[in-house]
Image (cartoon, rainbow, N blue to C red; front, side, top):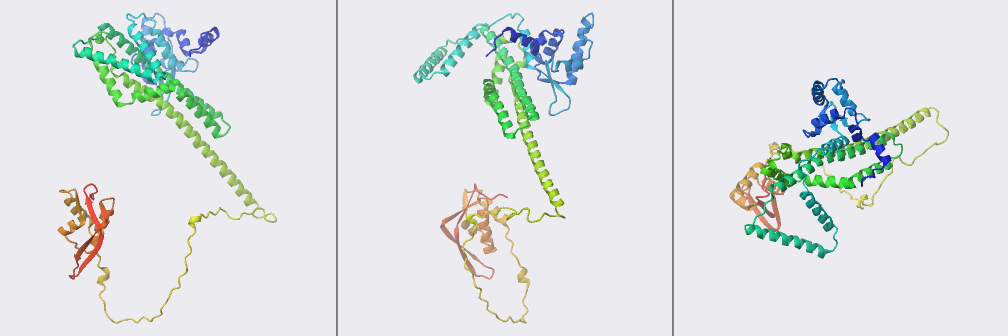
Length: 488
């Protein structure tokens, strides 16, 4: 709630609030005119130091040409630094993460002063109907959102349904009611004011998170207690801001705006409305066509401020861990120095003793079961050397099974059918390398789920060896499917 505007509070605001000090500054017209021209009119979030100083130089040059004397003798950069100091706080000077040139941004207090001055102008058109309807809609929404009687909610929904059915019937009957030009301009003007006010609200949300970040840094710099107590206080403040009405509203707005469907709908609505003739007569600002993208940019700045707060906490924990490790190493070195000092003149007796240098853990399941010892039976026989010459080339003969050739056969077979069995593949082309090739087929079927093994329906595979002898193997049924087909 707004604080009461009593005398003491107003005196405090007059002395210290940046918006009030801006309004009562000696060169307020020059400062406010430039800030509006540099930030509000082009809808710019922040500017680098050199471009902003160049704009201020041009602004001061034109003012000096019009005025008789020279009321602004200082350099542009001096004015910018003065407006950003702790006494004025009309600009915020900071260094971005991706560069070393300082940037300037408008503070929420200065933006409040600029918007208040803009509202002093007498407006040619003030919409009352749309505001009254908005009041009624908000009251109905509040009332329905707190209604606990299910029957009352159902009656309200039925009333809305009957009103919609009646409107649909009127349209189908050819009686289409359109909004007149005055109502269109009134609602468009209200939408424009609300959309621009959202950008100003983002600066205040960002400032609140920035104040929290600054407070966290100050606490870390002066904290002498334990880490747990400090983190509890910091996270408590962070949760208080996140769970406040402003924090909840900001996160709900951000989630709503981050929806791609909502962004597309906003783009289509704005484009259609800007083409309406009554709206075009108002000569709206072309930047309104991308106002929702400006919202996204402003919201990302606030999110980055929260990310910096989390980074600051992580850096604090890392520093504390390094300090703890350093303290432990200092204790160990102190023990080593004492041990070396006592090496030549050890004390009498046993100064310290430990059972083991490390605890020994034995889990019950790690104990092996009893295994009876085996007594080997050794038959001592005398080996006699033979005189026969045996061909040793058989020891070097090795058979290599090309698995890529087998996978290619599976892929060719699955081009015309969904599945194929190993027996069908061997009927088309029998085994060439006997048992080794059969084992390769089983390896392909079990690698990466490329085949299925059906243990309930075993099958027999026969092949003929090089010497004409037939062999037979009994194994589960192997099926290759298109989904699990082996890849190259």
